[in-house]
Length: 228
Image 1: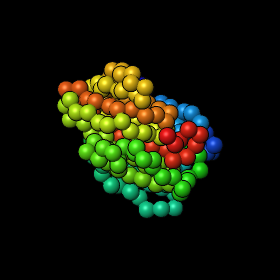
Image 2 (image 1 turned 120 degrees about the horizontal axis):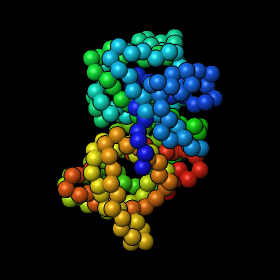
Image 3 (image 1 turned 90 degrees about the vertical axis):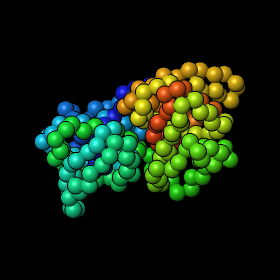
């Protein structure tokens, strides 16, 4: 498990292939948390009144770890000043822009940048979490790159065995959960609010502790190992 990458939803996403990679032109505000063949995950943080230089992002998903009041100024498009709430999820297209924190408090966003081409042929399997456990798993956003799930467990709740494709998890609460895999092995997994992790495709049965669980799961539709 790793720390998360923060981002303003008014963002798009960038990879090192872009001329103005935010990690290169603005390392003070853009930190890499995960970088593999499928995704790059950035933690984006801006203090009150701070502004980024112009930079590029590929298509991605922004997960807000704090409330955000900001101004995104894309090249050739209208300025976006939509306020965002902690826990909000937004699928965004590739863009070139600047971002400014126009609020009175710092903000933090995790941005999942996609590296593989989109796929319109993805379908969930028979043991899809949304199908077999709609109480705990709901769709928060979706595009041709990924399906984003909002996962909520109350205290001491249990799921059923289900599948996930390769994914990025962004934790919104601190706590722990018990994970039982298909072979019957059960492991206790602690997690911290704001942490991020990448998981390959897997099958499991989660159960929450007294703290409950809240996590955003960005399920990938493309790339090696994306399907369960």
